[in-house]
Amino acid sequence: MPVSQLVHEDKLDYTPTARSVSLARRRAARLVAEWGQAEAAGDAALIVSELATNALLHGSLRGRLFRVRLVMGPSLLRIEVSDPRGERVPRRRRGVASTSGHGLVLVGGLADRWGIEPRTVGKTVWAEVELGVRASTVRRSCGPARSGG
Image (tube, rainbow, N blue to C red; front, side, top):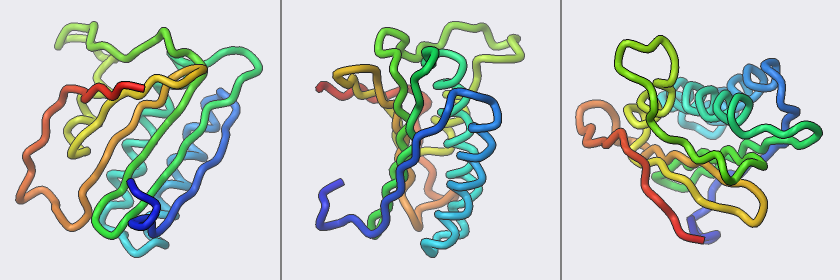
């Protein structure tokens, strides 16, 4: 999102613990509501929760933090979760009957787009939600978009 379109931004680093996931989820919901998009706060909280859980379970390294970044423009909310494990890229691996491994399917259902960006160290998994475009005009894909970098 170009800086000229930036309305709000927040980023915070978290220790890789289960408590951090709930803290990040609550912070995202509060901030999105405070930024005037209360109707998107629940979806934002759930997306943050799923991406932060993945960072905790699959992207954490001892002594390394993960980062949650929220960026809101006039019509778009971008949620990013960065972790230090660039070699652990999200993939759909489990069968439909599995009781776990469906977090990114959920993210794909809530977000208009999501994808993965490599970093010098680690990766960023991101999701974008178009503000003001809700369930009546849903046209979402559950697969990731790939970004080069």
